[in-house]
Image (cartoon, rainbow over all chains, first blue to last red; front, side, top):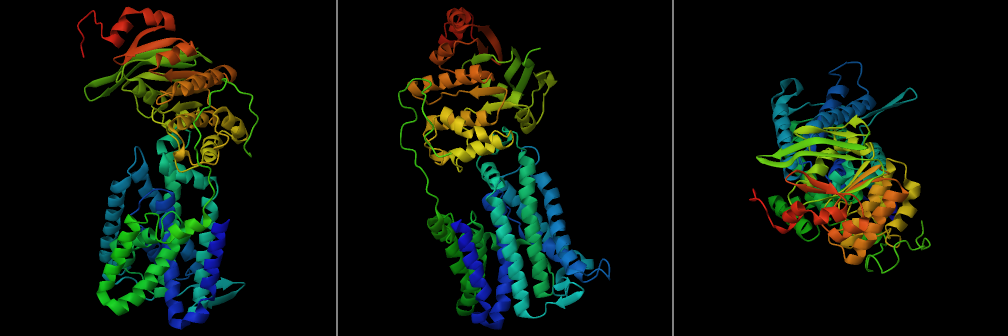
Length: 343
Length: 239
């Protein structure tokens, strides 16, 4: 599994990076890791599941708001556990995705550009809704969201400092990354590829295409919701920008630049793009957007598998047999040929 | 009780009656061929049986159970496999992975080596399905059906685009599936040589229903069928 090996190396490098990049960048990198988690969720649903969700930020935002509402004690003042908040954020996003997915995929189902447009529109509607939902802060959002609070064995620890926060976030992101990597390497991953390439064939083999699509859509939403929940604890506030158009398209660009069909490439796509944005926008100001746009176009036109995924694939390519011989050689109908392949 | 019973199926597309009162009974373990000119409703008929389309009227009864209007995956789970007209395989998976996906539901994974041998793709088991030659894709799809372990298979033009050698081998494979595995087969074909080789009952379809049924020799001499295929119309054509 050279693919996992690269993943281990990448997360190892991330783990030692705070020693070299200083306090400020460690804090930034924590946020980028969370964006990376959002990219992983989008890569799962888009690159693996074949569902182009143009509004992935809606799940991120829903998770963020649920976390904020929970940990600020707006539901039960005594129940402000971070753990419960994270679980509720994931469950809430997943359930929203399940309900939305049912309308999108039931019957003949919506796919391709139509699906992209509808999901984008729903993200816009939700952004508008949050802007006007005054009980949840409206345009200003919810302020003073507490940081993550770790409770274990009767001890309690609030993550105010950058370094411990970074490692907790890294741990969560790495755990999700390796779990999803394992998942897509099981037969579930085969089914996702199958549903992407030929859904009609899959349903005529007895698989429910609706259930499969719903499963990957809500799993991806749960991961995006987790990312959103982590994000509000870093930033300290949940605002309508978490849920809408801008973040949705940004996530799409990270994943397209990195490579949607490879979790690690999508994850690094988010981190690199964000890091580049920080550096380049200081040097070039608003012209940075042009550079990003050019990178995006190069990726889409020249390297549709992604700027990062293409070299990764070279490293990890499986050796494949190429069919060159004619299909059937002249032979009697039932040749007593011995099995010749390794089975 | 017939194995598969199609009772006066009707399906319209706008004003076009694609299937118009089609009835047919298949016995368990039988092999039947369905022929007919392009656009006579053969593929629509398969779509009605497999649940891809719902009939406007009529019933589909499989092993005594009325399955009319069931969703495709539920019908497939009863043991009805279908080969599409254009090879429907998973291009981005390897040959072996295609068979794994097909066999996972019915626990036929141990049979995969045998199926690979039967469809002559042992050497190409780890090749991407999308890179296979056309004839090999057709064979892989038949292999997918076998991995699904069905009791009835519907084959829509299984030899389209094949060389005569491949066509012959495909006919042998179908006979083998039918006789050795006791799978009921209904095959749509245009190739008359292929059907003659199969030596099975033949049903000629025209304008959405069965025009004639019988064995190959009888059908070949039938005046109406000749008219249908060669345009020697005795009555004014109402196209």
